[in-house]
Image (cartoon, rainbow, N blue to C red; front, side, top):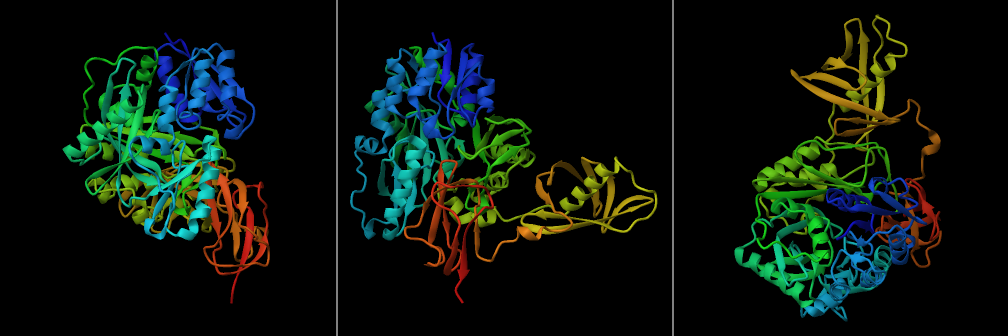
Length: 614
């Protein structure tokens, strides 16, 4: 029997595994990098072991250090979570060689399926060797790992070499393995997958389907179970193929077989020999705990004779610290508050006051809703996200709410090209026009506690805010009757709650302030100083870092004075395990190159200056 489990991972998945372990009475062990010294997963575990360093390569990808930690603290099993070393056969063998239990599939099964190239060969599919124009578009894909790292769509043959190099770098950084391969890219298919469980007694059980078609950068954003609108024959086919793939490698434990469904056909993509990020939707529909099942299987128990029955529908949304309107750029900073109301499940690796750093994936949480029907589940999840208090870096919350209510998605007509078609509409700013006034009134009332207001009429007061990238001015007047604002009656105003009568409808505004950052319901404002700082201006054509990160590459031969074309790649930033391309905004001359490879930059740092040609 397993009594102590070390989770070789971090963040949300480590907390998720610990939750089940605690419910089963199992002692928990965390490992953490220096950047994660105060992370939630390190705090909730019974014991935590430091992995010196900050980057994944120095910490969570160091299998030798993790095995040493497990032995040192007396753990008797290791759970890999997902990502990092979760699909690394050598790591699994090292765990077993140390006399520990491995809560996962046999190393040989991982080896057969964790490499996407070998998995496809096992299923009778060969990757492309020599790519020609006739093969385009193609997909460059990392052979190890997943989560969108090391994946690139190539539509021009001239771009292939550069995208191969970028994919190799991303894959090596995320998984410690830079192997990539090329396969045909199927446009606008549905991403459908099958959850399986297999025990050591020969039982392989498919647990329904999931649809994960809403993706950005080949990484899933919204997932649901079961896959809606799948024809019965196709549903049975993918389940049978999933069982066939598992039996082909004598699979044991939890795993997922993924397909791209297009034109009524299922194209095998890969088998993930680990727990998936989206496993909670299957748990909700089948009423089971997949982590508990993993532990029971590792202990040698057979699966229950009677398979669980599906009920209702579940939908999961991944809440990211990122700006979808700016090429999905990851965001960092302090997460002041994260509260999601309603009957939903919240899986997260953060609590109020935690820092979101540059070294790891920007996912803040997974929010899951379960209901008797799909429309009810979508409504519940959209409402919970819409009313959530998320104070901190920019997130994709508004995108998630709009996606869940989009007619194409509600009608289950989505595919993997959903965001390519609809991103501009889904990210169009729609701030509350009265939010600046509410913020100004709350600020005035908060300050009045320290000096009070004289009971005499006053001149109009003004306060400026930045909202959705635009400057807004709020005007109000302090009178003997109280606060007044043009066209709006102030029903109540204090430091945290403002009620405004707008055309006869009383609207409530909850206001919270952290320094210059102000949150009014779900609208984010930045209070502007009365007198702008003239030194904060940049020359026209300045390229600023959209996120904190490391300059990993500068275009070959690029120097100040070089002629550049609009859209031409100039340099690459790596942040949160993804590489981001910085391109020339206009055709002209590069007058200044301010960074070199290896340099760390903060958001807003000057990278280069391009002077537009006359």
